[in-house]
Length: 283
Ligand code: GUN
Image (cartoon, rainbow, N blue to C red; front, side, top):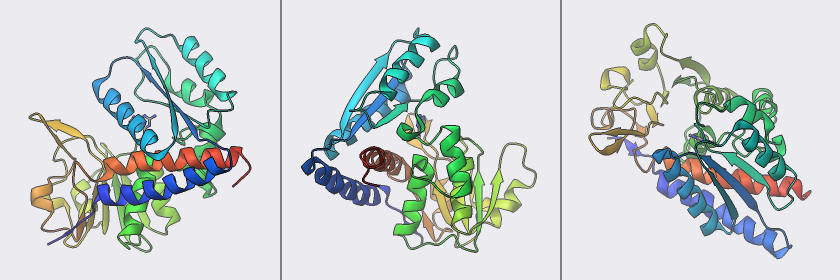
């Protein structure tokens, strides 16, 4: 029997912490403002952005939403970001990805002022993470580290295997586990012997984007299994891990939904708070 890692409970603890600090800042006359930009009509992105807005409201963070039409040009988007970069009431800027194909994502990421980059996607912040000296941590990997801490699971000395090498999850996840002294392997679509490598993992993080990709024969008995997947299968949400088959083998596992998802939003709120503190000379 494995222990369920409850993202709802752990994210609530993070959000309580953030809300208390936001209230403290308010008493000092400082409000926390987060700008969220969405371009186009991607249904999943619309849900994520709505959830981010809801979280802001419940924590006392002022959310400024910019919902732009699909035809928005790269120049128009860059102009908005430049305006938000110099707007004092905006502490954090997030541009929801993916963007429409005619917009170059990296150019947009590069335009966000690093001190307002609450996603930690800007090359400056990526560099800070690489050297282990950072304020902002990418929200999903940060949420996973928070979960491990809460469960008293230390990556130190353990075999940590991350499946997926995206800039949003896989790469920063590997780096954060390395900072915690894990022995890290990052796997991807070209990896040979994937099953054997995964079977050697004490901590296995699946960020593939394919429903039920991680099967029971890929999991070492007693492993900690973290499922980053958010896939739609026959109308319902499921992760990258075959939960029913893997749960009895793992020592701890995250469910989908109610696992990593709520953590990502909680860590975004924490990054917005960090941005406001830095910009007001409090950190
Ligand atoms: N799209 C999927 N995940 C994310 C995220 O963490 N940040 C942004 N900006 N876009 C995303």
